[in-house]
Amino acid sequence: MVQTLDYQLYMRWMISETPIKHTEIFFFENEGLKKELVAKFQKLFNLYQGSLNRQGKYGIKKATIFFNHNHSVNAKATVFNDHYLISINKGTICTLWKKFYLKSDLMKLEGLDKFDKVQSNAGYPINKLMFQLCCHFSFYHELAHLIQKSDYLTVGLSEDVTSSTNFNLERHVLEYDADAFSAVSLGTHLYQYIRDWCPNLKNGDAELIISVVASSIFVYLMLFESAKIPFYTKLDSHLHPFVRLLGIVHYMTDYIKHLDATHGVLNLDSSIINSEMMVCSKLISNELLDDQALTHLKVFFKKNTTDARNYNIELLELVSTNIDLAFNKRNIIAN
Ligand SMILES: [Zn+2]
Image 1 (tube, protein in one colour):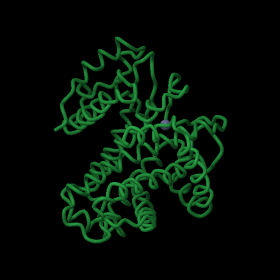
Image 2 (cartoon, protein in one colour):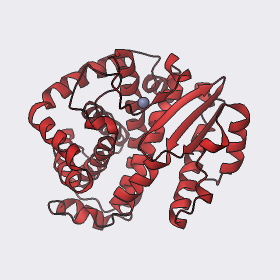
Image 3 (cartoon, rainbow, N blue to C red):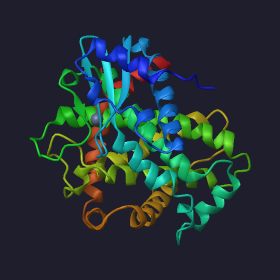
């Protein structure tokens, strides 16, 4: 059972220690939201603040997470003196809520029959799992930025930029690393879900569950404003969402395989996961994304998958050899 934490109390602490003002904070209890959504904000706060309270092993002694008023999909990590901060736009949670949590018939879409069949054997709906893991993805990505403690953190690392800035390989590597860290953390949640909620798995079901969750991350990345920029590799300060997705799926699948190695019951095949994820992504994108995003998607699948894959391999090597990055710090502590 996750402990309920007092959001107001943590906010007062943060205001007293950092330049964040009361007016910048979204107090979800007082905003006239539906009861169920207020409870969800509280639950996410309990989980994320609880996790931040346990990051002393990375030298993070004081840290707070808060929701801000912005309606767009975005999040930010920063630090003031020794107080670490994560800010998640309320728009991130509310958008994911509408796109996934409330869409209880998402798996009924034409072409998703086999995913629906898996869902009918699971004890928890897949659309709600998608909501949760997309929210968690955002949190763990920002947590990784805190753990990286890069020079950029003092200015603030924001997830989405609409104005194009110069290419910066170091920033690309930091983003890729934050995704890798987040994907591994999601792998743990997903493995638990498969173990706890799907006792009657048939051969191939676990691959479908991983694919469907990966496709929700894909849609989530496509909700960022920067996804509207046509595909690129070495441009801009931020990675293009398509490059990010390949990295995330790789790390998440690899980690679940690693967790399963001792039991050896899932027998995961990465190529099946990748191809099923593409099928599912295309179908749910049609339902959840706007026309502009869909046009970019079509062009990408036609022209850019090889470039995305190659750049992905380059970034993977850069991340694996740098011990100052969050992914490697996590591995060192875990071993
Ligand atoms: Zn980031």
